[in-house]
Each structure stands twice: as C-alpha cells, then as structure tokens.
Image 1 (cartoon, rainbow, N blue to C red):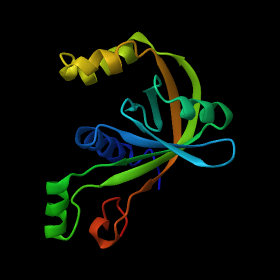
Image 2 (image 1 turned 90 degrees about the vertical axis):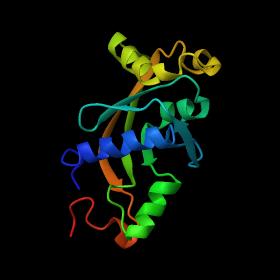
Image 3 (image 1 turned 45 degrees about the vertical axis):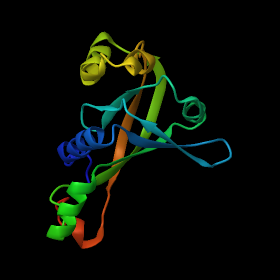
Image 4 (image 1 turned 120 degrees about the vertical axis):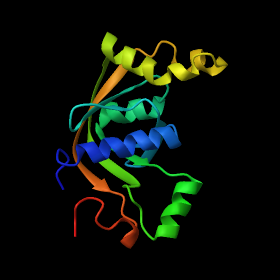
Length: 165
C-alpha cells in the first residue's frame, strides 16, 4: 500500500489517537537486538511520509536511534464507547490504528515554527502545574521519514477501510 495515497487517513488516525490516548508508541531496537517501546506525545506528521517529534525525555530511545535509526510508530485510538459502538455495528467506520515504518534522523534544534506548532497543541494545558514540568523548553527535535505503513486490521471489523476489497 502506498503511504502517499493513504497519508490523509494516516493523519486522521494519528489525530484521533492523540485525542483519545495522548500519545503514540515508538519502537526502536537496542544494541543487543531487543525491542524498546516509548510513548511519544509530541509526534507531528506534516508532509506525506514526514514527521518530527520533540525529544526531551526518552534516554534509551535516543541511544538506540544513535546506533540504529529504524523506527516503528503505532497509533491506535479508541475508547470504551467507540469500541462498543463498533462492536454493536459489527465493524469500525474509521481505521482504528496504523503502524508507520521508517528512519529517524539526527537530533537537531527545533525551528521557531515547529516550537510554535507544539505550543499551540498543548496550550490548553498551560495553566496546569505539569505544563512547565513537561513542555517548557522543548527545543530539540528528530525528523522521521516513513517509507511504508501497515494498517491495524481486526478481521472483518476493518475490512474495506483502506480501499482493499
């Protein structure tokens, strides 16, 4: 399946995931080949196949990416009531999840536009105590170029959501 053709659907899945869970999961591989999964709430998809995220907290993931830039990002959204509605209907009306596979770039300084976009995303929380603790001084980003994706398929419940028969 072509990532460019499905980019709008992929972005919809990520938007819903961030609204329902607040994060997606990013998998990397450590030096002995063991998988490592990190929750990332700052992933921002932009041009087709391209994204970046703010890298402030994940230490093991940073070490892993410095030696092996391959990543797999999982976005899966839901919630009790939307899942119950899908079970009642016998199908999902929108794609429940997607895996993006790609390569992460080097850590770099964020642009003013990237910082602004991030602050716009989290501004609703600015009055909370944790806002400064988590999101103040988010200045380092890492680009990711995704070259393929895999839809999350749940049998007949997701049939046809990605254009397949």
